[in-house]
Amino acid sequence: ARNSTDDVTMSSTTSWWAEEVALERVSLAHDERERLARRRAARLACSEEQERRVRQYEIARAMDMVERMEERETATRMEECERRRRMKEVEEDERAALLEQHAQRSSALHSIVQERDRILNSNGTAGGAALRV
Image (tube, rainbow, N blue to C red):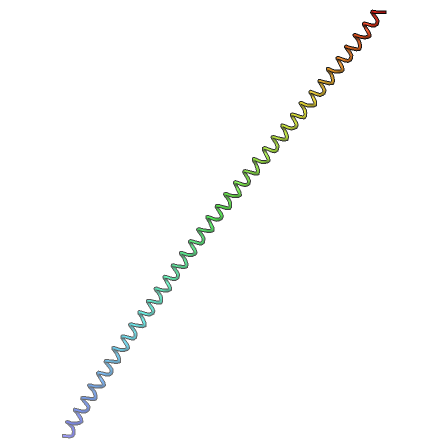
């Protein structure tokens, strides 16, 4: 009779123990699934953060490129304006030199004409006086 009570107690202890082990296994499996889910979520968040950083980097690079292009365009326009200004300055200097040459020639011609007229007038007066005498 004692054996049967011990068997029942043993059987109930074994059953209880088996349930505890099974519960522990379920609990461990659940904890493992949660740990894996957290790890996946962390990897996904890391991946999303990395993608966000890559997008930010690409946007910053594109903005830098646009800025450099605008700077080059501005520099090119400024160089073109400076080139035109220098060309205009050279043209104006050449025009001024031509006007100065023209003025000098006109003045020289005027002096020649005046000298000729003076000579003609003085010869005419001298010639006329000689004829009168």
